[in-house]
Image (cartoon, rainbow, N blue to C red):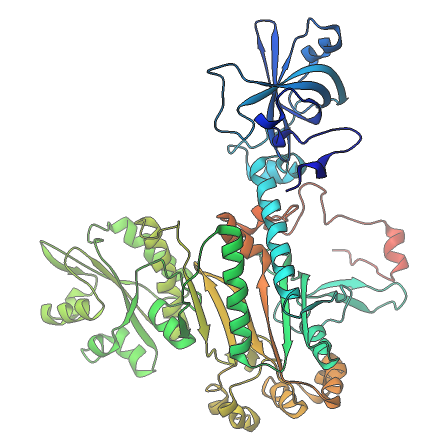
Length: 594
């Protein structure tokens, strides 16, 4: 970084840029008082700005410096001084400016500060207070470094894509409400009362329209909005690196995405990413119980249907008869698991919909199990071995519908691996997941839903099944979709898009849209497909999640300047908040009374 970039009419240098090369120079600095120490007539102040800390020495006997006695934490000051070497034994190797200090010759207090409600970079402060006083938390080097990292990733991405012919295009924030899985944030129109804009959940149709418009290669760091229940890796408003390409198929988009991923990791972390394995959705689910598994976790699932069914145990036999799923999770070295731990694991499995949890464990005393009275010792040994169990280990079995079995054991797999410290968090593990089902059946609404979105193209050989529209065939249709998983998180995902009108209409029919519904929601898009649409595909990266992984933080709110809480509220500004009655009347809105 060019150090002269921070020179202005108020300062000559940034605090963190000074070093031994500046010895004897007269400098003007501005910043925040980080700490103040009074030592035998001299006052030492650590002055802080975004670039770092520098130690400043004040002699308050000097009339020009007497106000140094009044300095307190977080005062904003301007000072002049001379850079000098620190005395022997006073060098601080932990900071970049540790070899020097500034002997102040003048001081001006630019802004006083009351005692702050939180101390900068205090790890013991509650998250509630950090969010309420976010502007103070942003002063911490921890959060500032993350925001700088976010900027660097955005810059690296822009340069990479621009060099490969991509054009950055901004798409509207005020747009049309279209069904994309989550609830929309709606914005009422004052001009057309009773009608609403929707904040985009993604620029999906817009980027496809850019391909129809002949832009060929598009990208955008897009703001997206989803009114959905929050968790550690979600926020109601978020950013994604949005990419779309014309005249490509699945492998083209995957290759470019992998190249960008390797470039980011090399530029930001100085690390090389090796060959990324490619697994089908089915293999990932059967092996790990999840389509976004953390490959750093060594625990795996095994199908045990063949050895547990047919022995008269009704729970297993009933699930096998209805073609459900019976899987076991083997955990080496876990034979010491206690009854209370098993109860906790059972509760977790039930939380994911399981009816119960079968446990087995084997130590020097032999094999113990919650089902030992229903099977012979030989049968129990076969089950334990088939599940991957060994001496000193434990096995947990769930028997239910495929989705419930997988979700339950995936949760246990993650929990137990963290409990036993089986995951090396210093490493990153990547995985491509492909061949997703195009559709999934919603038993509650008794209709098919798009697993990704309704513009995803199916595999070429499955097109007749999609166009046929029979339920028995639709469940077999696989998508030209691809997700990149890193450390158990979906880092980015995309698909080849439908580019022919008749195929798009077949997709809408499979989803149960009436002619009126498709015209109302997507009529503009269906019409656009009539006028010559290139084959195209794309990918969307979760920028916040990407930064979360690169920064090694546990929650997305740690990488956003002004995040929301789990209730989608801003503790700092108190948004959302009531508005004046006059504003509502202008919009033609009257709130219902309860």
